[in-house]
Image (cartoon, rainbow, N blue to C red; front, side):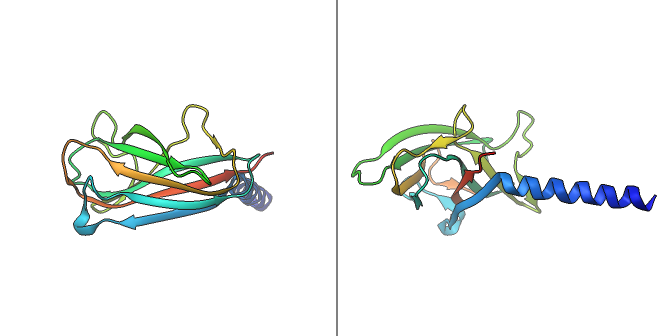
Length: 163
């Protein structure tokens, strides 16, 4: 019985160690929003450095909101500015925050929910073709303005380790 227990612990430890090796957190930053509302004029910008252009990266939009947030989604204008470029490329993206039954997709504690929503498209990853500083800017483009019950927004970039 003791051997089975030790074997189970060993497998569990190995699994956790292997899982922790699949992604390397490279960058994460959140910004708090004034008075827990997000106005159209308030843009959240994030700058990060890319050195490895051969690697795949996973990008995430982070959002922390209360359970009183009145919508099941959020529409964003995302502008990506490449190193050395003066102008960014803009895209409009809908981020689901709740399932069809209204259950929040993220994890919650009390009235606060935090969600980490992938932005890397259908391939599941992104490639950065130029070395240097990238700038990604989020702007909410919902019909309601200002957008209530949003506490923080952020960006997470993970470098995926190749096997």
